[in-house]
Image 1 (cartoon, rainbow, N blue to C red):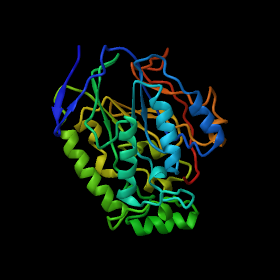
Image 2: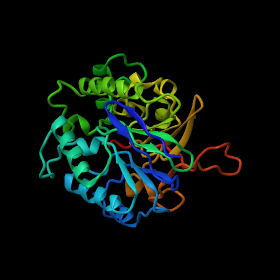
Image 3: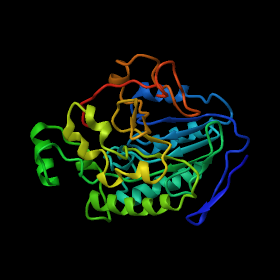
Length: 313
């Protein structure tokens, strides 16, 4: 049965005949030749498969275009959200736009390719395991995930600089025209909260964001100070408030499944070659979000491999 919903001034459109898989991946980092080769080999399991891309395709706009065009030609629908790397104004990128202007440029690129972004009406997945609203989000971070013993952003940054673990965002991710990254984050959180509150009752939600909505996935970081660049405490209750079925995210380069207050959190990143070479299983495997994968004895946990990491990114 097709499901249509109206909210936020737009129509939420159904998938069609109720077939296919809802798949996800993030942190493709195709600036590495090995990772670009992984993308070249990515294929859907059926003609009705959707693919959620949770950010960090790369730093160069042309690389983002190539990746989304490649995947968009293969999958029924592609949904993209920005990671911090797409938002960098990298000195090697001919596109030197900053902040909001850069994000809007990427959204325009996606619309040329027919890729869904956080600025579009949320689509409804009607395939196996559905219906569910797929909500691409762009939220950023606000330094509220402070290191232990720190009470302010300034203390946290001083601690991070002391350890040498500082995100490159501090030099490459510009918030223009906002005065700070946390101000941009506050604006994104407020707008996204309004949109999620307008999702019709009775439909579960699958948020897709580069960062997790809750801090618990950062518990395994080798360098916990890096959590400052990994989200915001302002979304800590969203998985309860907005009927979240599964929260899809990346950024940490720790692909795994966790459960928090009865909600499944899926980290779906590929990561850098030096990271995925150490993992069991084939690299670049897409994570199935719906229908949910259930293995023997896993209590309903989808497939995934845990492991900490401690590299700035």
